[in-house]
Image 1: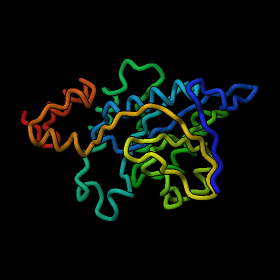
Image 2: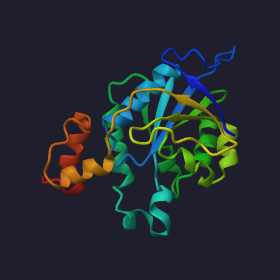
Image 3: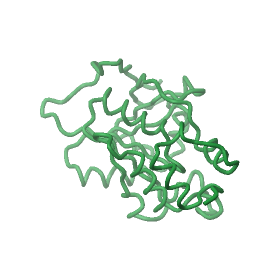
Length: 220
């Protein structure tokens, strides 16, 4: 069975080491586009887990989505544009930061590699990989999963419609109870292509970039 601890609103069950190293959340994704649900997840994790920093790591080539065909076949927006949208989404939010580490590394995006690089960048920090309950059950399919759990704590956040999704047996994890928005990047892209408003689903800066670059079929 997996091992978990439940984190309430005060975050009182989180163990804080005596020397209090930096606590860093890693929220990875394609962010195509980033939306208000992503931002709220970052804020909730920051506050409930008492994180000093939440890194929104933009996937360069998310292998689980692109497969052998690469970004072009998968239809994903160029990483540089996705990074710009994430920068716009987190602007003004304390402790939330867009990160291009995976883009700089190039090639397929593997969380194990990202964690190793982050340990070098932030020596002594505690790393927390923030994932939605919709992907938790697939952790064993990640590349080098043993390295992932060795270098970071897994934190599962329940996504609307996917409540109860948990890691496979053998994974230790934290369960973060936080109100999350039911927002879908797929739905946003569909709305843009149909000329429907997305103001309630994405930050203003993200909507502006979508319009400026004609993303997802937006009419410029």
